[in-house]
Image (cartoon, rainbow, N blue to C red; front, side, top):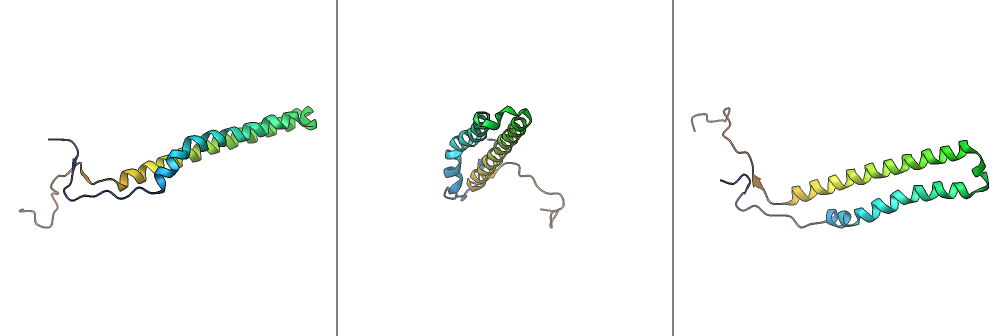
Length: 106
């Protein structure tokens, strides 16, 4: 007896935007992580780079933007994975008779 069996007559749906998005996630992750870092590096080259407080604010914004971006990429990737699983075939994972069925004698 296998743990997960496909139910007869179950079908898979056609893939959609989730695969398109998942294929681009590494590039989106890399570009979105590098842009705030490049802005922080560019701020150090400006004439106002002498003020440490201004640089610290730019660094905090860059760190916050990178962490927010990572969170969004992870959330969207998890959502794409869930959509892929939901579009797949139906499996019988844990079927058992319910004790409170409409006809208990069956």
